[in-house]
Amino acid sequence: MYNPNSIREMVSSRQYLPFWGNTASYETVAELMLQDLKGLKDCLIRLLCGCRLEGINTSKFNNDISFIKNKDDAKTYLIHLGYLACTDGRVYVPDEEVRLTLRDAIESCNLAEYTELIRKSQELLEKTYEGDCAFVAQKIREYHEEYSSIIKYNSEESLANTVQNAYLVCIKDYYRPVREMPSGEGFADIVFIPKRNADRNTPALVIELKWNRSAQTALSQIKARHYTKALEDYSGTIMLIGISYDKKTKEHSCAIESIKKAAQ
Image (cartoon, rainbow, N blue to C red; front, side):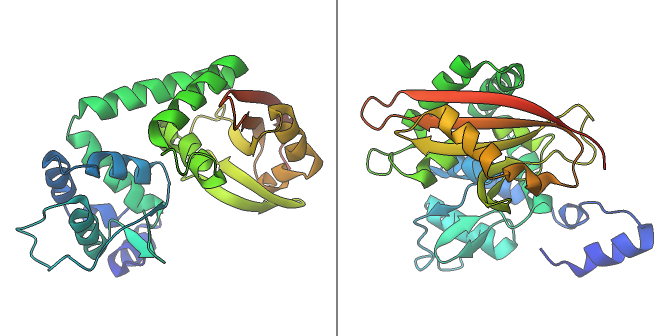
């Protein structure tokens, strides 16, 4: 998001920091979350994960902030405030600075469901680091069944959103996940890049998604098409993760491999 105050503060302080978040209170977001509008909490958490969501109706919002009656009104209001953006009917968080401000707003509500999601996500991330493929596959299946509708279950978009939701805890040490990142001889489905201030041992994650094919096939594609070239300026551990599922049985599988990229 372009914000003149952020540019001025960056130039004067010579620091690249989230100045936008300090120009306005996030109490508005917290108040909307606590109104318990149907579906809003889940929607904002999914947006926090880096997902882009379809299906917003902005036409019924009458600009009366004292009468916000559903999640579409709330999202439209947040678009006006700059917390969300909308392109071609798809809603998303515009940048990392705003995403962190939105996270602070959600955390300030002390929602039990958010705390539980973070706990489960942290466990998943730790098991990913350990290379526990069976655990990762089972948890991704659980997320897939819980957060995907029957109609949209079998789609790359659904699986990608599922994975981003599952790794919600990555907001702490990773930038917003990059979808379809141009790299090597194609596009890496999802890439998590560690933040500059993250622990130096935090690995980058390159994830390839498939269905009706093996997770090992997905992993092999990452290597064959050189998707790690997207991280040519990164030195450290890169985890290659292949995730797949069977359309009929809905069984999920996972393959994980780590490589070490030396400093240039």
